[in-house]
Image 1: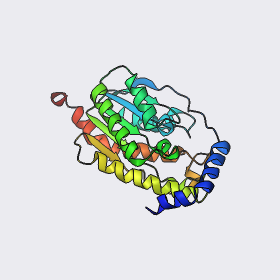
Image 2: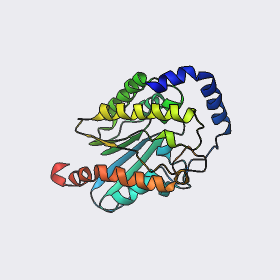
Image 3: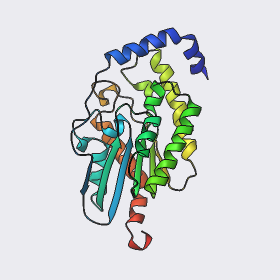
Length: 242
């Protein structure tokens, strides 16, 4: 765990860099557009998107450019989609647990989850985060009875332009560790689909702030999530299997 040793040895430098990044980071607004609605024709499909700023769509100007827009566009071609985004910029996994526990129980067929970046930046230990993520999944299953839960991995934070070195390297190594652990957590669970966030390390594809995805990354992310669940969507659309 070379990055853990580096974090200890370089702590004064990393602490200063982290404070500076938070002070200078561009505060991007949440995109405009509704977070709940119905669109399309065909068998009913209830979609819930939960998570942090990426699930909210920060880095785009409208929900049509965000994950919701790209998923809704594809799913609405074959289904009547009842869609909801329950996400919050800056949310950690613990924040989302509290948020979901306060939400009314409701049936969703497909749930998309993207969390972890804010846990990394707030120095939540991996073991603690895994326990919290497991709790989050239990809450999703108990309160929303999803047929499919699509879990997006941790993005490659070593390519985030906003982060200076050596902070970028240390955070990037932690992100890779979180991503591998998350993949193991959901592996073998029949209702779960894992989406790898292995996007091209091109700074021009990021948002102006250098920390959030830009519209092209959201478009590719939407394609990845759809490809991960499309066979499930077809199965759910058959009346004798619903």
